[in-house]
Amino acid sequence: MSTRCNLKVEYTDERDGEKDGPDETFWLYHHHDGYPSYVGRMLRDFALWYDRNAHQGWWPPSDIVNALVKGAVKPHIYSGGVFGDVRKAPVDDEWEITDSKHGDIDYLYTICVTRIDSGISVGLWCEREYDDRRWLIAKRTADGEWTDSLDDVIAEDEEERCRSSASHPSRDRTTPSGSPAWRS
Image 1 (cartoon, rainbow, N blue to C red):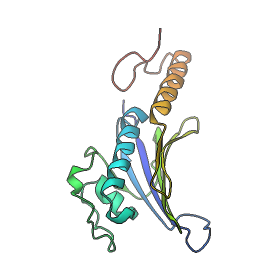
Image 2 (cartoon, helix red, strand yellow):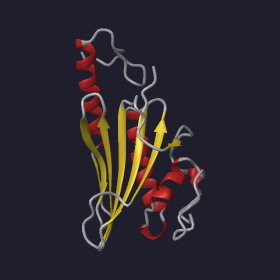
Image 3 (spheres, helix red, strand yellow):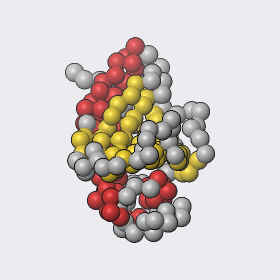
Image 4 (tube, rainbow, N blue to C red):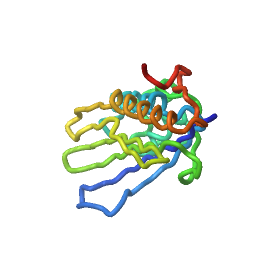
């Protein structure tokens, strides 16, 4: 059974005051292994890689999507795509560009890029669709500092899925790695 997910990449420029919503939004789809232990880890590693390789700390969403799908989108004109070889991005080849949220997903990941006067802040969020549980996986402040809570997110997600599958015998009782989901 596939664990499908979407990734929403949002960019908001707040240098001229607060906005009602993002200036740009891109959607991507990943057909399997959407758990935080796989896609969440991949996106956290990707965000750290991208931050180290981005041209002067600039995070245009078209370049983020371009790196995730390894060259399918034309790079943003201001960065010229000069942030490293996108083929070296720490992501698999399973991302597809789409135009909206798919109807049958288990997880929704969001990369929120906000440009403010003092720099760029980035948040990576994970939302479990069937119970609306939402976690912050990683965050970059405008001064470039990262906080990371991925291991806590993975542990909490797996524990809650174990409880849920124990109360629903028809559900799969294994983790994405194939090991038993329950703890002794």
